[in-house]
Image (cartoon, rainbow, N blue to C red):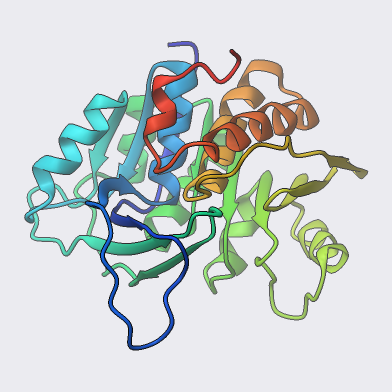
Length: 289
């Protein structure tokens, strides 16, 4: 272990089917046995960080349900230390059904999480872990907001996974240092990346990157604009690639304290993951080989 990071947000159960193409309405198709894996934005980011760092800390609700043991075993197997925000409570697992076609495109059906009353306070979590960086994915806003406030007060860098606009981002972004956005992340009134960069500047977010699949990553950091080319790979599956980008970024940013370098290194790993089916097989290989 080199670094300490906390990832706060969503944990899901992903049921992923691999098919030739997305089916039309009112059809029934047979597939091989699906992958059933633990996922979610913050969770996948923690997995990528642990792959590079040997360990990571995830704070997310899992609670008591049919998947509790499965989640524990999966996270233990990939080196993620899990603080269960719903520990000892009945909690509905967030399920996601994923259809992945042979060209790597995917369709996801899922649902929003229920409100959780955390069994550990943000203060205690941060005191115990003493993170060097915090990443949030925008879910569980009350807990996340307190986490980002504490880290801001302590000078701990805060990274936000901005996958899609959620109303709570309007307040959360006031405490964010680095925002890594998908091309779909458009705050109210924004229609393109330039308007997004202006919006983030008004929020005093220091560094912003916008990823767009296999296209170049645009960024603004300390008023410097640039683009990072995404490595080309034979894409088998893009599920989790953006999340892995975020987790790898956190690791490389702690390694170098260089935003542009961290984005470049993280893009290499995220692209590497796309050459494997599912979100776990790539963990068995060296992405630098």
